Image 1 (cartoon, rainbow, N blue to C red):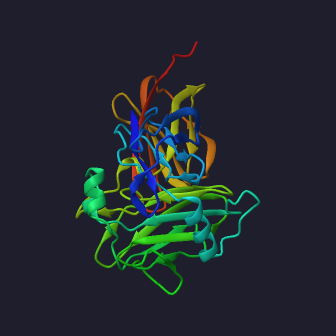
Image 2 (image 1 turned 120 degrees about the vertical axis):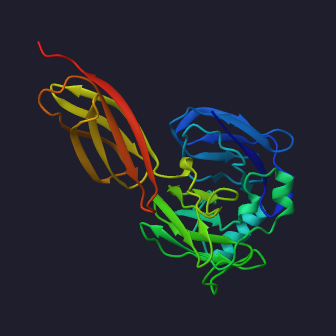
Length: 319
């Protein structure tokens, strides 16, 4: 499957960035290069956790996108708003962000935009024409909690006096420790998708439109690629013990239910919580169970989004 989008200069939508390398944190060998229009297409495996980032030409700065988990659909318009050196320095000074000798933040920064529904599922020119595309009156919270955020005013400037989004929609957290953070954005009139930011020292995660904190239509759920991020391994049964490996990209709750070919439950376990990283979930299978069994793994992120994955295996006869 593919992830595609455009790299352009932050605050200059008319200026694409050609010759940038698009990479994936979890897949070092996967790369793509932006063309003369700043466009790229990155081929990635399905059912895989991916954090795309841009390795730009000189004069620009590395930016990460949010962390996705590919789930059967291509991800389009995964754009990179990439600041030039002068704007990068200006934003650091304006926000008072501590930086190391390489100029990168000492901690991590997270940026997103509470963006309107009408900039999703459109081409780049329409996206540009509909800018500014922020939704005013929204606020964000984080799981786990971190200091902030700061909201951008209508002049696209971070403004510590603001307590909610302006028509620009911009939101920033400036000194974020390493870790994974589920960001949830809310308002009295509008529902927004949540997103996952994966932070390390020196990273700037910009979950920018039309992803990040995008407006949801009435009755719409978050797009599956953005929620309950985890790699679910293959199911196994050895000596009447069921096991499955899970690499959680964020803090998750959930359960595993094992059923035989007649649909009868023959084992189960709650997962509360799953920790970030690798773990094995195991439990005993009911005596007498044989043949093919199906495990349903349900994971739920801290925003309440739920994903179900099934894995099949076979219990061998003893002896």
